[in-house]
Length: 385
Image (cartoon, rainbow, N blue to C red; front, top):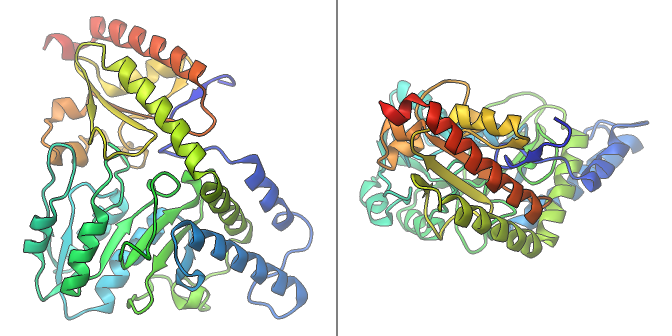
């Protein structure tokens, strides 16, 4: 639908027109391989290094600590598998139960290889308890994985405190910051995470490109082998246009951080205030320690898939839980870990706003949401069973 109002920015964001402009020179005309010695190759190499500087600046890192990947999932895989295989004598892993599937499935793969996994608990808002983390650490702990901000409910974890506990114990901490980047302050100089995953398409950059921050001195084994690009951590000819776009998106995200987050928070709060006046609608995740653009709701008496499709027909695109795990009709592990039942989990939807949404669009959405909930409750078996 051409005039559809997009409210699913946690799934992916539209490509910023300025980012497209930064990509076009690398999609048209002569382009070189960044590993080549000739002038076109040197120009490509310079473009990649310029993008590396911009991505590094977004999180307060040194450019040399940034490795470009094929996306956030690959970054998470590289961190989890790379940290484990760089310390083969350590066979214990600590992980939160609210991780993105990219971390969760990588850890499950290691568990099948014989690793012992301690899965931490979370409270009803999805927050990891630092004291529980500290108790879980052992001399044979290879790494800890706790995401910076949850991709479903939007809760922001106390990563700084968790990272300092891990540093004191000499255990690496991996943080998935795919949703956090551009929306909460990220400074790896202040927060001593060992590795951190980023994704371009969550900050108005192109899909299919991501980055992994690796703190200097942290050992990591590659999971892709070949010509040794990206200091041997991610072999393969670089996605030049994608990386250039990622760099531009990171630069704009840093420059416009205050303006974007203030705007998104205003729209988020407007939605929360409007929808929670409807009986049986409640907010999931921490009410304050949450992403500025995320509204995750349980809507009693309504099946989430029906609500998403109904609103889509009315011209509003929202998400059902996590887009990265929506292909299978299973209850969200995140919501289950937070203490919700399966029935509640199947009644959850995610509304995520972006920098280009307007107050007028939100007013229209609130009217459509109320109408959709009322009509679906009249039809839904969840209401009467």
